[in-house]
Image (cartoon, rainbow, N blue to C red; front, side):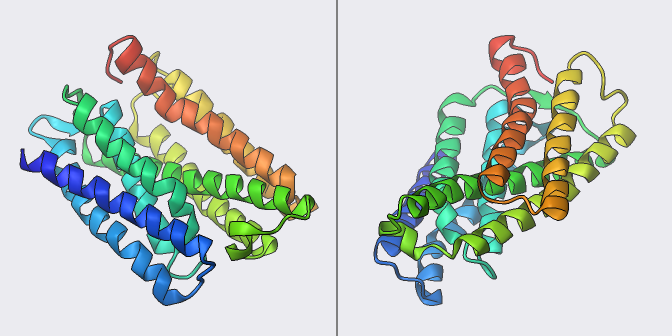
Length: 269
């Protein structure tokens, strides 16, 4: 019962932060004080969320990586990384998209995630999982940044830079932050693939081959994007299309396979 109450309180805190960020954006308040005032409830929520994850993920039989646990873990890490990035960069407005998603993930886990599907993993495999989740989380934030860039670019092209667009950093700064996220996410994704081939007995086993192939394709998409940025100065709509395409493939491999195996087929990976 206390877990349910804490879950509801955590959801409320994430949503309060969302409202505060929207009000801050509407008022075009870009001060440091207002940023941390808005993010404070999310910081508390992330701490409570971490405690909830410790109750759900770690079981007597091993690490529970069922679909709703995985989504909850991913959204928590995305929220945490976003707040850490906000220390030096103006990325806090991405929380308007991220924090409601995290609240939804907690709600899904609480209402639909009662059944446990447990995977027993060893320490090397845990390292691979941690790196994979970190890579996915960082590239997820990059995808949200790309969506925001799309909106900003469209407003500027239509010569309607009003509303919340005025409160965003300049387009060039937004693009720079996007590629910084992608570069770091690509590095982590490379480590994830490397550790996967080292620690997993067979990454091309029947229940893993689709995930492995899609992950490699996503890795290649992000790699081509970074090469295009370095070689040809890719930016704007080209960068946005490649970013969202890479994320879509990665999401299909990472979460799509779990949905099919656990919910549609009813089999654990």
